[in-house]
Amino acid sequence: MYSAGHWIQNLSGTVNAVNRLIPIFKKEGYEFVIIPAMWDQMTENLLITS
Image (tube, rainbow, N blue to C red; front, top):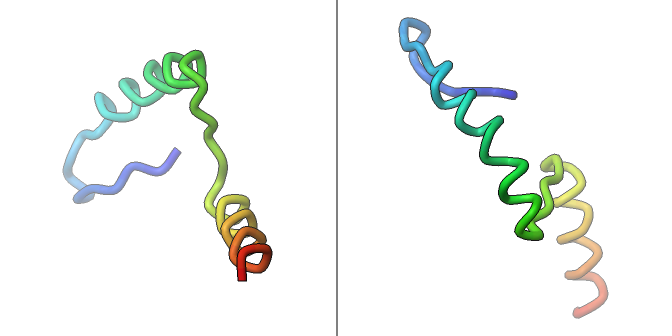
């Protein structure tokens, strides 16, 4: 997981929170994909609807 911030910032709390939240959101039906997969899906949808 990538966490953006200044090199002196401790963002471990954010990373830990996200690791706990993802399973909760998945249970609620959300799907997590990497950006290239999302981009491919968006491109396919544009081609179909155009």
